[in-house]
Length: 554
View 1: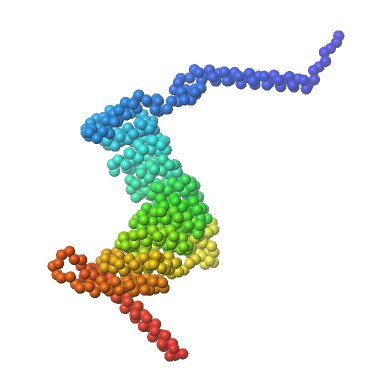
View 2: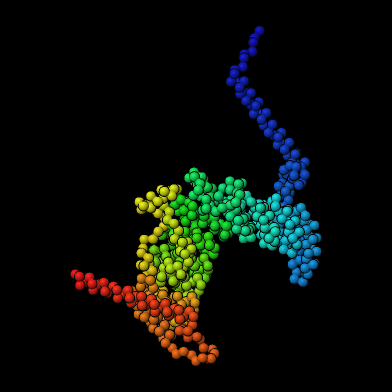
């Protein structure tokens, strides 16, 4: 009897592999069929399963609430009509609030319905606003990041009474660091920061220091008040956390909020030189102009100019050139201009970009509360009676090493060893002033002398301009105007003498300006001018006497 040969192991393996592949394919097909059947059996709303068509499974808020939105929009048109009375508006708001109860957040994210909900917040009473806040609180982050929903939060923050401010600030606790890096969220954080108290503002900024400052905030303090009390590893950890928030903010140029201005000012103040150099490169340019209207924003501007390279300073000057006419009259904006004119070595760039804008209306600039400080800083720099001490400190921040993180002792050693520091100015201050004021009739010094000569009497009577004409008449500190404008300075002195030498008006005559020798500000300005001239004469006499003694002894 013949025996069938035993199949080889290679053939058995190939047959088992084919069977295995066939089973896998059958299992996959069965799974697809089961999944498709499950989707087809799912409800249209899509809450218990995923539908084949996502557009029908998850309808948009507008489609889901189309009838409701249409109804409340009609009522909104009545609310916004100018002939509608206050009582009628309140009655309609009551009706709308009853209709939208439980769906406020979804409706606020709709283009049309968001305006209706905002109108309810505006024209409703405190109870209506409290109800809106209660519904918005659980999803405050979603609303803040919504392109339409954040307008409702902004309206609620704007119209909220003082009694609700603490609750609103508490709603955003723990979310500041996240929202401040979002375009819509940053706008809401800005609104909350404006209505918050000083302590609440400090607590909001402290959230950007690290998570532990959110969980264990206690009495919030500024980072500059306690950073040096921490051990060095903890200092590095805090600054590392701050940089994780600061760098995205600067990269996205989300620098409009005063909270961001304060945070960046603190970040630059406590960070090592390497981190500050990176921040300067990110901020130098147009973003800085949007920060000059606040104290901390101006502090950041001055820090960028002080720590920046020549290339960084050039970007800042070009960005400011188009806004000089507005900056000269701002409380903090003029500080940035003074800092640029005090620290930037490229005087040619300054004469081309900033000086022509200052010359356009020089007579009014000398009478401006803040604008005159720019001129006086050039004529007599760092004079506390002209430029306050806190402004001078802002213009001259502490020097920083160009290297990485250093302790205070290591930083002091580096300064003694004259190692590289950020920024700095190589040009002598007197030389810089002369180059900015320049020579010739069209220069800033020439225009200034011409203005003072033509309006000597008016400037003497003005409480602010009298300081400017006095400094011009004395040729400025270190005789900065004597080198190229000695003749023009003499003309200014002659104009002052002519104004003081005019006849006194008769008593009882109306419509005549008070004589400069009798008017309060002008009489004291002339007295200061006479005393200054006397001191100068005495000093020259002593110098001549010392020279004569040296010759006699020699």
